[in-house]
Image (cartoon, rainbow, N blue to C red):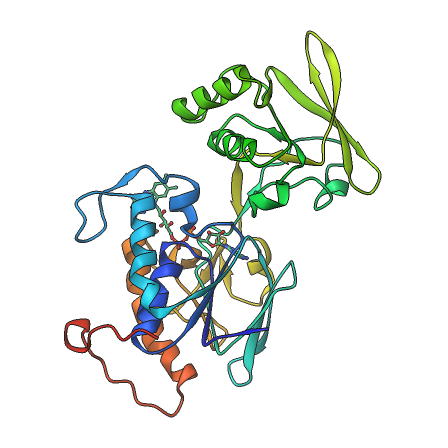
Length: 334
Ligand SMILES: Cc1cc2nc3c(=O)[nH]c(=O)nc-3n(C[C@H](O)[C@H](O)[C@H](O)COP(=O)(O)OP(=O)(O)OC[C@H]3O[C@@H](n4cnc5c(N)ncnc54)[C@H](O)[C@@H]3O)c2cc1C
């Protein structure tokens, strides 16, 4: 089991910045996120969009802000569990908490900070009979580790950036890659679409347009995928893996079952320190609600600073906290 001072659930911008504020006070953090990468909405939804309301940055691209945050927190050596959804929290402030993911990874901590944003991004699933039976047995909705697909036969489905990007990347790793898309043009970035058409033309991938996945089969593990198009009917392809990439929609998910006070799909907090109704558990960023709440990154950063000051008393109950500017104290890495 991993042991830390603060377990941060959600590695969006606010979860990332909380590592910095905690680190200044000598508290170590472990971050957990259901997505395979850090950055929350910024990396998942709008990485190349410019943001104009981050103090000190007249303009910064969302992914650049995430990269800068990673650089800023590096001295405090946070550890990460990515691609796993936190399913359960147990314990209390006196004895400590255990945070467990659906995959069984457990983290022991003194304080929990929920920075879960709009909740977990859950995959939009295509309607295919028995799809759930093959989840984890050939069907996956995120690519957590591309190496898992090395030398395998892969079918991807979708027409957005994820489908295009993973088709391009996996074409260099898998034995065979086929992309199935219901249209004949792509929603994703034009240069990625162009690359995919070129890979298909060069015979490096299969590209099946104006078609849908209609049926999947296997015996304990995925084996065949049926692809239906209006003109040619059904073709059956062998497949070790099917990766439907039809986007993600956020859902509060298991957070709603942890005994926290929930109001309008968000966690109610006090505005002095963003503590929840459970001692030792804080909620910061888009996941919380209070009178006047603004779902802005800069507000989440403020909440992270206030939270860290308050969390200190759980991590170091016998120590007095003296407030110091970074200009005075500098950054003391772990
Ligand atoms: C298109 C768009 C443009 C925007 N533009 C701006 C802007 O210009 N300025 C601005 O200030 N804000 C903007 N926002 C809002 C901003 O993105 C959010 O305020 C910000 O992302 C909130 O950060 P967060 O860290 O609280 O949550 P998020 O970024 O949502 O990250 C939360 C993370 O928690 C994870 N998570 C949730 N539940 C679990 C669980 N049970 N287990 C594991 N992980 C979990 C999620 O996977 C996610 O990665 C914009 C939003 C969008 C969609």
